[in-house]
Length: 391
Image (cartoon, rainbow, N blue to C red; front, side):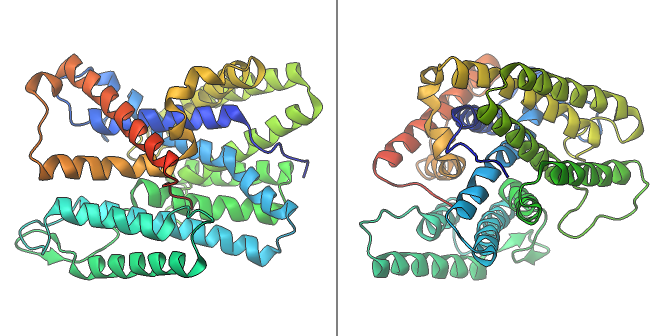
């Protein structure tokens, strides 16, 4: 495995843009009378809107970052068991958070002991207590006390949870794993593939084709089962694709072979989009809801081409200051994802509602951009106070 640079700024910027847009599309989903191309496309429709591009881009970006985290531990002389534990703990954290958040969709306010907003705030606080990036000034005893308190709070919240409806009240259950949970499962598989392959590019390319083959086979009804953890392998395909592009970029950084890399990246992006369009009629069309191969490859190709542009702007031309306003979304991404849960809950508790013109059409779109900037502003303030999650 070749030496990796300590940090690639274009990856941080791509992550920041994607997180900013994820906050935007999550908020704009509650706005009425907006252009159809902005929205998520319905499951039964063969197509995709702008919102359908954001989550696969984020999975791809996790793959871009993954080699740096694993290789950094290898370079520090960490044994295989230590790195494996790091992967397991990181995956578990994302899966647990996703599991609790997805159950909020099924929360039964009438049967529950706590109002939805209070329950959501307490869950988010417990996440911060468990997975906060504690400063070195914290003693080990104080840090452990906070973590144990967070775990106990989360356990209590799990016990008192009530979901379902009046006719059938139920406890926590994996309806689906949520955004964070899907990322966690995909990271678990992708990180172990990277670790076991020792970052060998050819081995990872082979793994990519295996996972892509599973995804295609499932949606062409050639494989009539979904494998445990792997599922239809759509998320893993996107993440391993990000790993491969990251390793190719490492070769460029080490060899300064600008022209060849530029051509490689353009070809991979365009071929990915072309293959997505080719496979579209044979494997379920384009569908985010069903995670079809066409959706996977088209989204991956678009993300690669955007990444290529950012490499030029940020890493080569040094224009990273253009993106300073959203920088916290790239450095405290998980914090950015969780803050809206607190923000919307506070809005509910104080009975705050946006004026009607900010919930419809163009006014609603402006509101959603404002919410995205507001969340990033809050996260920027929290960063200064050394309050950010790290898993």
